[in-house]
Image (cartoon, rainbow, N blue to C red; front, side, top):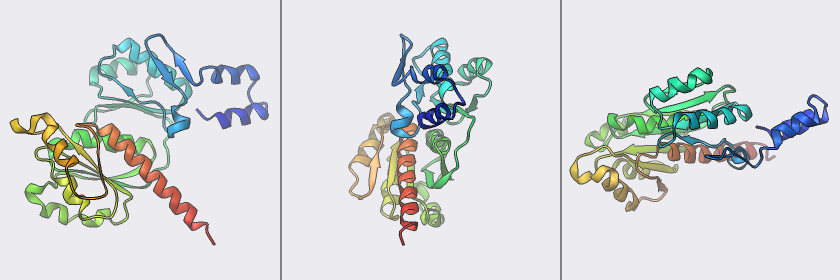
Length: 256
């Protein structure tokens, strides 16, 4: 929802005061009893509130997404299964689903994809978390390159693709097992690296705790760490960095 656009349309008499009031009355949030939808999130963060699906029943999800759809053209719901998607799509036919990322999304007004984010995985088993990050970043309006299965068990695979990072603004690096890849890459490139530990691994890996601690203990500067399997958090953080970088480039190009 664009408040400036609403005010312009009201000024130009394209909508009535009653119509403007109907849109604005739900600000800053809309109380459904079981949920309070933050309609100001887009103004503060540049993207609407994101819905986490697990733990919510389908009727509640439908009500939340319906209210979002009334106000914004694009939004996402994370960690969804196909059955939930099929139920929601019966009522909201414009919804799409990425089964790898487990992401339900609406993209009725695609944003121009600017800048460059590189999303990297150590192994193929890390791809679902990486896809969550990549898809969130794309829907938010970023150009994303993917580089999968280049972990430290065969580090030459990464070295063969280092040119991918030369014009990127940020990298998201997803790794399970011992979680070494983000530190290796962060030591090789001059851009911010967002490290994502995954729950992929054997016994002493402790469902992602081992790579999380390894990433947090890294001595490499320029690396930030998100929670285990938090592809969404990494993708949105990368979006913010990429957009700020592109904004800075645009400002610099206008300086005489």
